[in-house]
Length: 400
Image (tube, rainbow, N blue to C red; front, side, top):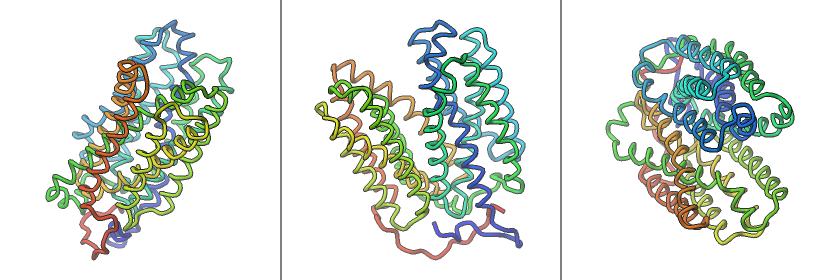
């Protein structure tokens, strides 16, 4: 969208810069709720004496609650001041992290983690909704992705060593401290509201097919990527690659993901958005097919790097394409698609792998999801790989 998509009113200055900073800070810390899973799985087993099923249940419930926060947000998102609602949710997250550290019983921990994830997911809905209304939504969604990737890389690099001999409580308390550091940034939301309709809201009502296509593309995108990425390491080791080289490749893929997300952020909104989506999804599908047949190390490395590069490059543009349709709860609904795809993908991938005794069925399924997602993207973008310049639409409700 052009910079004129969000303008000023009555001399008030544009607040997109404030939103970019708010989105970056909160998305980095909020998603740590999900990013710490590989780090705390072992300590959780040690502290509570639980098995794989209970560990999986805990992470699934956290992810499900993170996504289901969308449902109550349909009620409160446009009815309450953002500073008040985000402050309340942030305090709940802080309290939840502290309480998680003190939980002596696994089932009590499960309840606390669900409540914490509901609050974290509620703030995520705000992040997505605000990003769609900024001067440059593509850049805002790029920041949303980059912040998560950088925090994820830091967590995986630092936490295992830092907390090697610590109780899992120390990890939760560290996350509580990080969340407290976010509180001053809530002031960036003063004067910003979602209670008035987006200036582009009328477009959504005229484009139900495009809106449905966008949601379907997002769901299939996350189904494919979460299924493949969950088993990426096992695919390599099953093919005979040692754990050390596999870890190095996955680290390189993570770096590639950060680079591609930074590239998308730097490019921001572009008339070539449709072309970027087609290229990115095609690259992901090719990378999945490269994983078939137990690839050697070099082929696996190419596939992993291409997969993560395409994944984090596509996501900002896919989100901004859906955001362009407008509507008060458009981005709220996308959170449900993201969480649903993230939750179903690994389960479906694991089922297909166990059913067939190999990864081929899962990989073909993921490649098919990406191919269908590509078809939906063409509907979403009306088949235009390069958008035609349009006159700025009149703006009724800016961020100011």
